[in-house]
Image: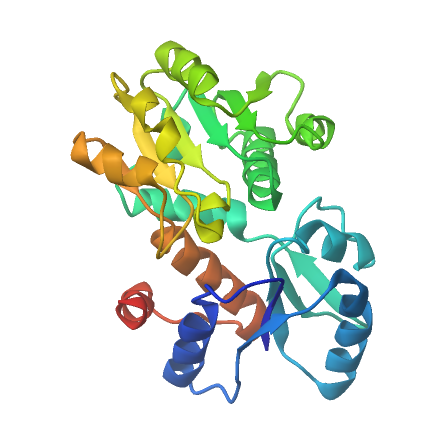
Length: 272
């Protein structure tokens, strides 16, 4: 088993899933598997023939893996598990994000505004998850989404995930735009979903925008969250890094692979 990605030296997934396998008595080894996109299809063919139990997928391969799984209708996937004839895929990111927020005592349905930084696969997963909740009447109303990103290539695909009655606003990610957005959505949920901290950019230039903000800050990066998370804590805001989401989406993946999941507290202790 393992994590399919590129430049994934930072990952804590092996620590989580190897600990979970040991706790549950499952004979498995979970490894970081960094590889180019061109190698993934043949790798999954060989892994299937060898009887591998399953994999996670991370940046930059989430959309590509979704495209090669037969019958997969998701734009982004983070989990691959054994099906009848070949691999099947799922995304546990959206549900994992919502469950992680509950660890902070926050329900995602409380917010009328979501301010999202970034436009990668995890953003697609969160929007798709919330749209699905709305379709089955588990989300009373869709929040207004303010999406700020440094690249605009994903705007159309992300808009297609949001239901027609929901509003999504796109703008470039910079201090001025973030200040303007937070001034309009002072009690919103700010989601830092870029991978910038993993690349050495702590987004400190955006921190002045938090002055006057009274909402909640969720930084999806774990181990090395952005300066926005640190400043939010200093301002006394409710803030959470990506650890809770990481554990919750991992536990959802374990149920797909093994039919059971290790206790949250045990996995949290393994990370600490």
